Image: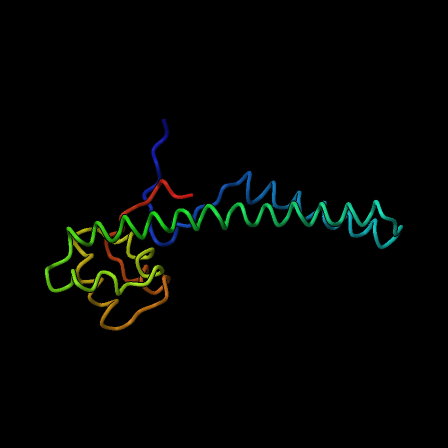
Length: 146
């Protein structure tokens, strides 16, 4: 079994080559081809082909959106549970003050730096996930992402 590359801010985005670089272009090309055929030879069949191609693109898009939404719900729960055990007593009452985006970004912070970073996020009202992730010094990898 091959070793996993250590995860960092620079490489934490997950790309699934068959999904992002094969299936997506196929669906896009199919839509372009169906649209071309509809424009050059308008018929009921060509309209149906465009609608089916558009449906495939929507299905592709929403399959990713729905999976990420389910994953985000789990991450929020997981991070609240982790915070309940890791944060100092003065921050525990503020756990529910974190937005979903903040919790999702904080999941990459190690237990050792979570308290300080959580305090900074709350006090400075840092909302952008990118900004929070860039503040992380010791990256806690998440290899089980969707």
